[in-house]
Image (cartoon, rainbow, N blue to C red):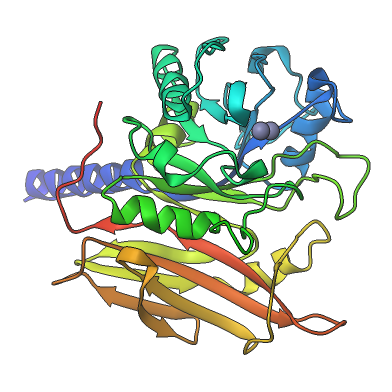
Length: 355
Ligand SMILES: [Zn+2]
Ligand SMILES: [Zn+2]
């Protein structure tokens, strides 16, 4: 009887251990920030790292233009938290204003500056980054409207792009003749690409803080990962285990029992929305509060819920389904501003990572 009880306890212990080991938590991170090294930013790598550390982030990429900042060369604040890491990276910046974050690389990557066709330039970024052990995030496609859908569609091995970038000049929302980055995303997804959306700061100014400058704290990702390391965070992101945010925080965002489930964390969102760094999207007057929408091919809205949680059955769903969670509030001068969390698409077809 005693042996039986001991065996039961051991099995129970193993079960708890296994579950603890597999439990994933949300990690907050920014994949795009600059330092004085680029010549057009105002703070050292140490000051930039300290800003993100002190504001509760869990990871940061110091993504300098064509310059590799070795995380081991950057001193973190004294008594820094153990749940904060620097992921090695670089902003590969080539001709035709094509920039990408090379995430989790093992050293400097150098792109081919002689290429002229945009799709080939992006493919070169993806290939050289992969050779350095990393993954590519295609950055700010609407900056000077440099990158269109036809430049991205031929590229293989690209799974991440910046839907939201906090720099004031990047035109996330498009204009009368250019589509928004969100509409671009739907076009790529409808076309069959497996590509996930990132939100980042592209911060350059940590001393001069105003809406005309690219400041920190405007765009980030929340990554669900079993542990905090450069490798696991990168793997989680290329498998779509994260959401992008410019203000809205979620408790849950993922598939359970073949149903896409979303739950908003209203308390944490309220805390974020108090932050002076945030920059909402201007919209015509809309109903204030939370809205959860699920989108499908061609960006069509499949379902809308006004409230703090929603689910969408994936049974008989179209080729992809993705949620967007918005929070609207009135602006003092009229109109409204919106903040978002963009959940990643889940696929109901055969598209795969192509390695
Ligand atoms: Zn850039
Ligand atoms: Zn940049």
